Length: 331
Image (tube, rainbow, N blue to C red; front, side):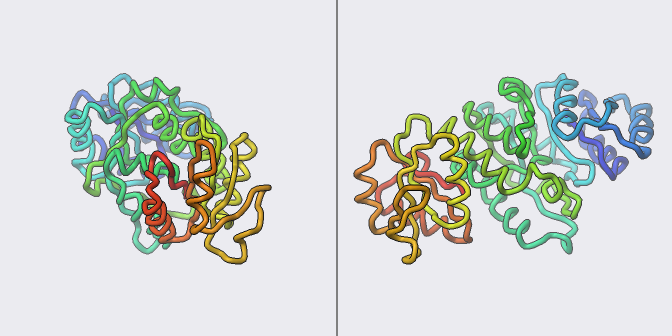
C-alpha cells in the first residue's frame, strides 16, 4: 500500500506508482494544505482510478501529514515515497516479495541513486556511498548511530511495527531517523533489496537542506537521546573516541542527559594529557590500561573524518573489543 506525500511532480509520480501496483493496492495521496492545483490534479487521478485516495487536510507539516497518511492505511505493508523522486517499475513488487520471504524483517529499503547527476554534491554522494554499503540487518544495526541508514522514500514497512512504536513523532529532529532509532530499540530488523530501485532527487529546497530539524546539532540530540535509552543503559563508563568537533558536540548532549563520561581518546599529541568536559584525553596507546580500570565501559567512536572509522575499528579490534558490544561508531 503506497502511502504518498504529495509534492511537485504529482502526475508523473502517481502514474509511476499505479503502474507497478496490483488492483488490491491503494495510493493515499496526502495534500498538506497545498495552494496550487495539487488537490485538483489528485482528485482527477482519484476519479480516473479508484485506488487513489486523496487525503486533503490543512497544512500541518511533514510529521502530521505522515501520521495522517499512516492512519488512513489499511493494508499490512506501507510504502513511502515523495512526489519528486523516481521509483523503478519493479520496486514495490521486489520489496513486497522480500518481506514475504523474510518475515523477521520489519522494514526493507533498496539501493538509491541521487539525481540529476549535475546537482548531486560531493557530501551527498559520499552519504549515498555509505548508505548503499549497508544492506544486511547486521550492517544496518552496526552503523545506525552513524547516520540515517535508510533513504526514507525507499522503504516498505510492516504497519504493525509502525503502530507498535507510535508511528511518526515530532521530537525536533529528523522524523525518519527518529523512527528508525525507535524501531531499532524495539528490536526491529532492517534490510535492503540489493538493487537500485529509487532515484532520490537532490535540489536546494530539499527538507534536509532547509528544515532546521535536519541540522547536525539535532542529529546529535537524537543520537544522545536514544543512546541513553539503549546502548548506554546500565553502563557506568563512557569513553568518547574523538576530542575534535564531533566528539565535543556529541559529548555535550550526552552529559546533559547524565551519561557517565569518563575519558576521551584522540591521536592529536597537542590534546593528549589535557582534559575536556572535566575528564582526561588519552592517546590510543593508553586506552587499554584506561579501559581495564573502568567499570562497565563502552567506547563511542565519534570522529567524522573520512577513513577514521576504519582506523578506529582496526585499533579496537586489536584490543579485543567487540563492535556492537564493547564499542559503537556514532559518527
